[in-house]
Image 1 (cartoon, rainbow, N blue to C red):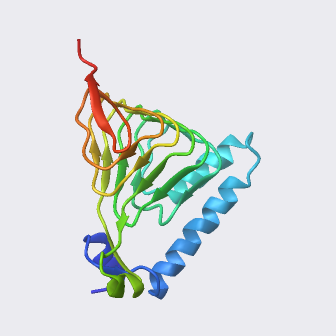
Image 2 (cartoon, helix red, strand yellow):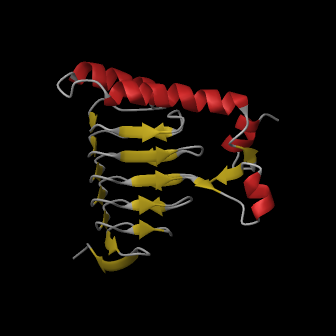
Image 3 (tube, one colour):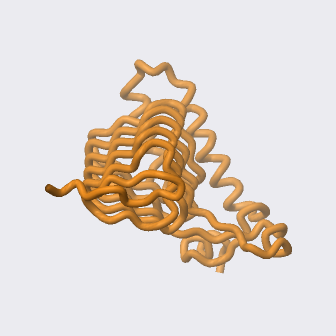
Length: 186
């Protein structure tokens, strides 16, 4: 089984020294570099490049520059997606965003995990767990979402939060670690 196959199955894989995965990351980062250095007014070129980078997009979206991801093909965005400046998505596992998702500046979505034992970690081994974001979700600025998290529809994640566990639908949640503060259903 290739290191990429292991990665996509959520198994331990060689993230640092596998030539094929390294080349895929360089290609993706090259496209991100090109995207980030386009004039902001060149909207058609920006949209074309994002469609080339990401695994799946709908028609209406805007990702402000700069934007960085690892592979791109594991990222799917829904309709009416907006991400402010400095979006980072580490995507050895799938990262899926529903429709009408709004992301504040300096937000990060991380799917990779590293072994707790130093010997395995020092070999460059890691594994990854997917992130899933529902529809109509709003993230304040500087939110970090960790591996394996699902965020339900219609929820709001407050600025500066570190989301370590699943967040249900229809809630306001914030903090470090992020916790549900109140229901958004009257």
